[in-house]
Length: 91
Image (cartoon, rainbow, N blue to C red; front, side, top):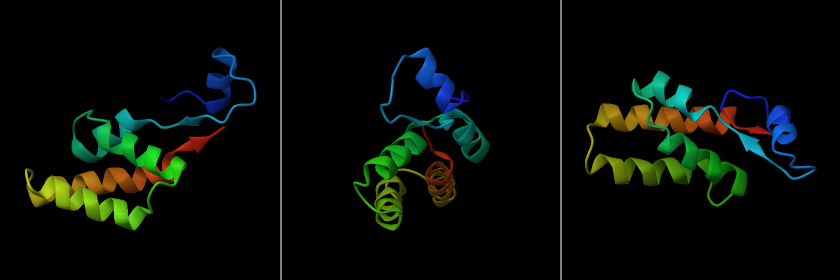
């Protein structure tokens, strides 16, 4: 979403809970040319939960996606990961 994290918190009456926000559609549109937000959303989830480090996640995505996509498209998806890691907002 493009909404500010504080606005989201207020509108949803979330109190002091941690929340995170990411404009995954814009990232996907910018990097892939299509609004397919799945990879940036998973990247944000990986970052905020610390399930895996960035390098390892990118390696796994490359292996997985290279089985069915051209190398240029794989690299576009890797860019969505980098942006998601940088742009996810905590509030």
